[in-house]
Length: 489
Image (cartoon, rainbow, N blue to C red; front, side, top):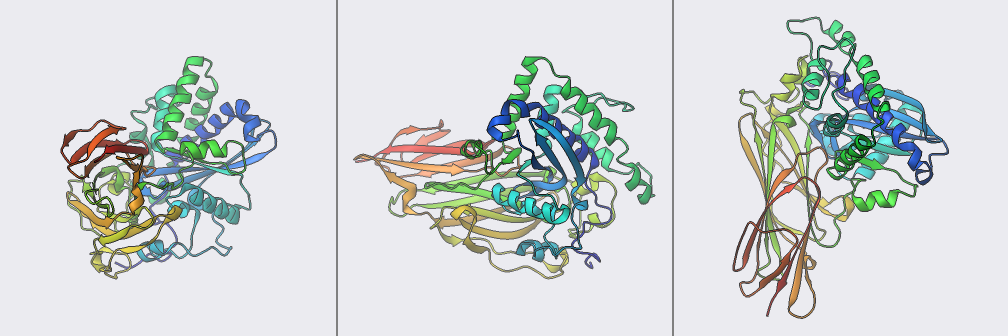
């Protein structure tokens, strides 16, 4: 099919869901107001500061979370919100300005010509993405920001689980964590049988004002200390699960946020390291239907030459048969469900420890009729330096509905992943970082080692164990830090 007339713009029938935009941004504004007083001194909030808030939709997964659907600039002075400007992410760019070229994969796979704010979170390293978002927001709006906060639908549902139900005037039912996604998707979609797309685009946000006011009123009315503590706990859990990311440079708390991992930085450390990064480049919302599983095997049988293999299996659970046409659905539909039921175009990256030696990685195998460019992709996986001093592998695949695909890699690890301790002891350490916007991905970890070695301790209980072998069934609900201590002759 032919490319859209303006490749840098989202499709004409594809707009950010205002339900998510206004509800989420109003919630964040109130939360900022609620926590500003006790943090005013440490955060430097006595002087005016402006923060950029990014509302992300993980149904369309991006490297540092979900597709940026909405933005807000929140100004805080003397621990109170003094200004709050929100907008659709598609409306904040000033195309009269000279925008930078987008990253090469966006140019190649999505035919993007300019790097606009909606694609700012292309780096898996959130501080890098946050700086890019801040620069693009300043270019489009002329406003300099002092920090960036991003959050997704899961974070909003976690808050609604504490404060809900929220009653909205004129709504048939209150908004809860259980029905939020259903209501959001219904509000985005045109009424059944409606063919007047112009009317749909101008009226579908009528519900948003009452919803935003109801959320703000309910949050401001919290007086029960137990609910406040529960709400703080939910926010902390969302930070741990990378559903909220915070970049606050030049504040006393920036170091604490970095140490806790709440800034979403790529942090490989000096041990074995793994981070799988997926980006939906298909102009759809199909990540809600994608199931992903990691299988990681480490071979330490030759301690001087450690090796690893990784399998990442993706399953498209959509049962309706679809022809894989990139930009096909996004070109015409006004129904959110159509964007959920489609093929999956995934630009994948795997970040490994620096010094890793790749032995095998899959080549791209995508025919031209499945790509917006019309150009088939049969080149080998890209290999080179990655974020945060890592080694990166990258490629593209298209996953039809009702099918599974496994990306399989094999590589040699740097020798320092196995550290010698005192005589007769060695330790293997692994750090696996979760991609923001993903669920608790299953991780099968298998380690083989010399049969004469014995396991002294592990940080997590094993599923099975035999001489020279140990296996763990884990879940990436949060980042994983893991070690095994061996005794050897």
